Length: 328
Ligand SMILES: [Zn+2]
View (cartoon, rainbow, N blue to C red):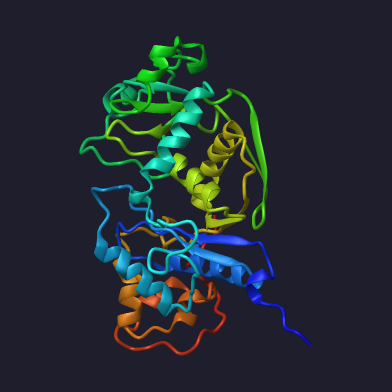
């Protein structure tokens, strides 16, 4: 009896998309492990994509650490910066032409407008205290845009020819996607069930391109998932609202979106999502302390167990109650 080659078993294409801005922690481990499991169970392909567009914070040492830590957890991928593949390059900083093409398509479709507002203008318009230090906002936490520049350069297709040619590059402006106010965006999450967001209420006109010449997370993510023919996106539930924004981009581009599987967040004992400050919960630290991957991946093991008993390996995972791991 002839065996069926595994590679032809499924058209499933998933991806792992770490950002090399710090060491991966327990939350990343569980999300990436789920992504790997789902690709494996579907007999599909998993692509590694390094999301290093934040040039200021991205470091090669973190990218190398991510490969190493994920392999240590038992996660394997078939395409990526280290493996090559049909959709190379798999590093976002090398994919500028892909993003520019998507920006042009959105501009010609009349979906974008240039925005001159400074961070200070936005803060003033929103009546929010001006955040000092020029820190970048969290990925999915863009404040609702007050609409100041909304009617500039409304629909590019109506522009006279020469003016359109001048707009071959987004340089020098922030560019925003004009959301259809009041429109409900619904999708079925494969893990969390039906989701509903309202454009203009849950989020406003969002950034697709930054003045400094880099595409936003929303644009780069959609451009890459589409170009790499990803069929299911597995990521953290902190990105649910980004999914609603990205569905608007898919619709504007006339591209069929992938399926979505958002993983519940791992929160610390204060109810905050894990971040770079949780050094004790970085995979690096836990591995150095001899904690086995099983303990890190088992949702039943409280985070307090992982950070206790310094220097002493834990026994294998045991279901436990009074867990400090909460779900959103
Ligand atoms: Zn503006």
